Length: 219
Image (cartoon, rainbow, N blue to C red; front, side, top):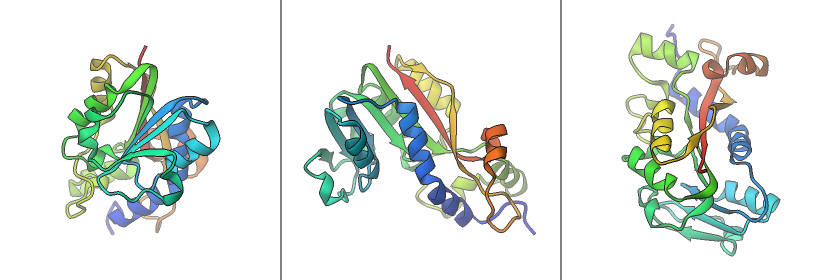
């Protein structure tokens, strides 16, 4: 019996936790009416819809290399069919979001620098990515030599993003980094897919949460 479960458990956990991750991202972004927003790797636009419906934004921008934005958002979102690496071509905004995106990029750090430069004075950026420091991740690394979210053969994830590197780059780009946040329940090894209860996640967020969030603001 192995010490770490199959990567499909990680995918299932992240999927089940996605709403909690979105909620944590929005909390870190400190939304309010009248702001402009950019969602890098916006996919269908679920997060942009939440922002539109709750906070009356002044402008919404989304980019994704595939145009699969939902039809009901097309009148409200300025959509750009480009890769996240081309973010430097976009206008500056009050809020920049990279939600479970940076790990998919071949050039994550130059992309993050470009995204950080789009943050207006007084604005904020929030980056969420798989948490590499979970207890399950540590077990798998020690037993198999693999990072759970970056297993060999799982092609979508190509760039492990350590939070201290994210923080360093945002600091170098003139932003003030805030304390890390954690969201989503990770799977407990050897339990058949059970996830950590809320009580354990509150006490040990770094070990039991599937996603880590780094937020920063521009003075």
